Image (cartoon, rainbow, N blue to C red; front, side, top):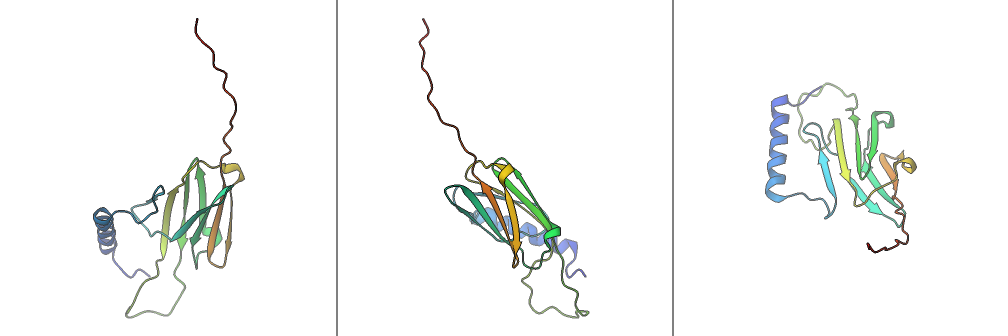
Length: 147
């Protein structure tokens, strides 16, 4: 059941974009987030250990089979769909804060990661994405002179 028409949803999205333009992003410095023009954006936390980046995403009510995670260099994209639980026919909505429907979100990480070692788990409504940092090789560089 759709509670708002497409026109109202598009207007809310335009208002959100105008607010971000006026006040800027609330993302931490050095971290860029991207959102598609449709859907909603689940809240997330991004933390770091000495070996990995950890993204914790609040996806309460979402089924793990309905979530996709893709890692590309230093960007993590996740998307999916959260369905509204079936309920009796609603005649009036008095308060509404929970987002339902498709979501898509991308986060640019502060550094490169190794996608081969990445993994995710879903527990108690939270998606945890673990991304091992890319190991950067270091070594000695021989200096030669042109003669």
